[in-house]
Length: 462
Ligand SMILES: NC(=O)c1ccc[n+]([C@@H]2O[C@H](COP(=O)([O-])OP(=O)(O)OC[C@H]3O[C@@H](n4cnc5c(N)ncnc54)[C@H](O)[C@@H]3O)[C@@H](O)[C@H]2O)c1
Image (cartoon, rainbow, N blue to C red):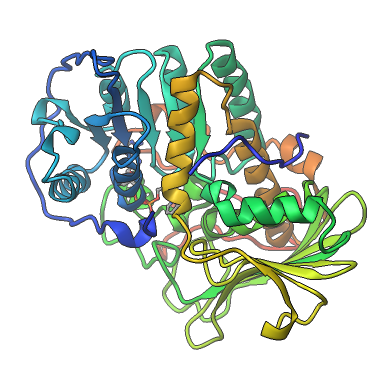
């Protein structure tokens, strides 16, 4: 296992709120693939976007805002044409003063399960492709990007099961052999404040870390809670509601919690070796998704120290989205109330009140969503080694380890998670609109849910 250490980094807006993708329909056909020629005299790097939802649109905008090289968007791909159309419209509006940055005519807008190939075929070696689909498609798309000699920015998490983790690690080696750069959307790693905090902790400012706590508690968000499929093609329903399906996203656990499990482990400079966990379904009513609405995980590191992670997706309860580190000489806040701004600080003791603050990162901060792009592009133009995939796989595996512990009711080690043969979507590379889907509903429209203690080796039985 690699240590979750600090990558090489350099130096704006919360991406979730940055762009709302409108759902208006526009007739975008799947047309012939024209090749566009990148690396023009001015050094322009071309970008293709695969997965044109909220994050994909935000990531494309962050890419186009970089200042260390000229980037332009030349191709887009999605399985829903209205998502692509909404994203294209939003980006065109945001960059209306610099329209050359969004150069995606209808001929380079692709819809369907093979759209990713057509979008990448519009690029030249050394250009960048963005993957912002649900994670199930990551290894499929990454395989083609490596074949085409493209640099990649892929969103987190990157895997949800052991077989996909091993596949991604192998692909990362191939990418290295071809000197391809790859960023993974664990943007907190690129936050200047967290980087300084990490250094201060390594320098002993709060002593040895003995315990960490992290919380992600709010009401139902994104597509984590779903009601019965109203009759859409099953595959398309599940992709649209991907936070509801473990094969597509690792469930809300992997999708929402990975950031804080990653950032605390980074501060500890280590990955947890095992996890035990609780979880349950409470006010489920007509919801048919596979998620629990509460999770409590105890992660253990090699030296016996702990990370306690609590996740709750429930209306009417206390909200919290913070990460805290306790050391033998003091303590620190890694995230105050979300990913950005982090408002990191250290404290003289374990009481984290204003009087005890020892150091605080000056405000305002630069958005880590912008910084992760500056760093990736810097590595491309300077040709320095840059591959965040192995670390992204490890963060995704550690997250999955906590999820599996909750879903099975067993203690799960890192090796057990990595070696668990349960592959959630083995046919994902051949997926088509009309199925079959990796999980199917029963006669009540409900999907298999985790049953801790009953299913001890697998998270659910399809
Ligand atoms: N780093 C962050 O803070 C952050 C924030 C939000 C989302 N994300 C990640 O970004 C990814 C997307 O999340 P989102 O919120 O944008 O979801 P979304 O549903 O808004 O967007 C996903 C898009 O991918 C498309 N898609 C699905 N399968 C596809 C395929 N096979 N080929 C092409 N397009 C496909 C969907 O139609 C949709 O338009 C997830 O992995 C999520 O975890 C990261």
